[in-house]
Image 1 (tube, one colour):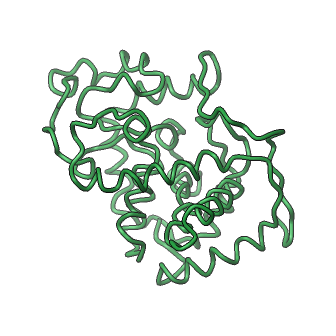
Image 2 (cartoon, one colour; image 1 turned 180 degrees about the vertical axis):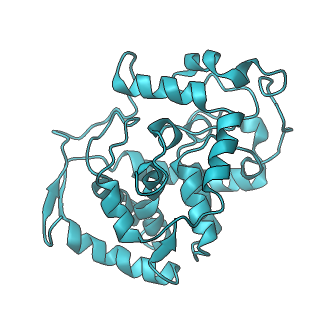
Image 3 (spheres, one colour; image 1 turned 30 degrees about the vertical axis):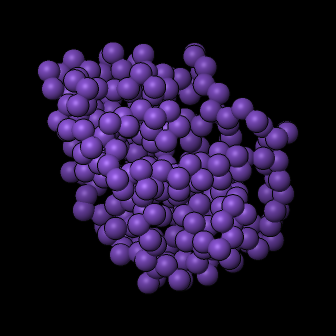
Length: 275
């Protein structure tokens, strides 16, 4: 996008009903594949392929440019380029917590992990990149969207993975559990590998911002530990910014980017990261 270019939302009006999922749509087809294939076996394959992080070095803004070539097939609310959503979320975070610049940057970068779907990186299928996240290695909650598709997931019929607690115990803590593979987990691993200076609240938000079954529906609450409960208010605040920033608006991309460039300088040793 050229310097000074003004971008406008494709939404004709302010939307008040988000995450409106219906059957027999491209979104439901994506979630069907997602829920069938998000199991322990595939998760371990992705971790072996991607970790440790470091296949390529890219500037954060190069990654944003690459995201412009990717459309999130799981999102029924918007078809705008990722740079638009990144800035909208960051600006919403600024309005909600003007004194927490780390929160603003978290909003701006939270979806950068979707770049693992790009052919220049890992070329992962969308079912392994987008969509709601949840723990695996235990029974799938009926509060997960399109939960009926889990009947075709092999883990649902496993003698251990298919039980309520699975391989865990109550109060185990979400950070200690294996989660479905997606852009949340990938970006969390990228940030850890690059020793970013963002606080633990930011890293937690990045890792679990798509964990809607818990922070929206209270599913899996029996696994939550003290840290999870401490972080929950930050997750809820972030979702206000992530979802409800999707409104009709015009803004100058290059002008808004300047603010986030300064934050990147503050919280990263270099804008060029290992991915």
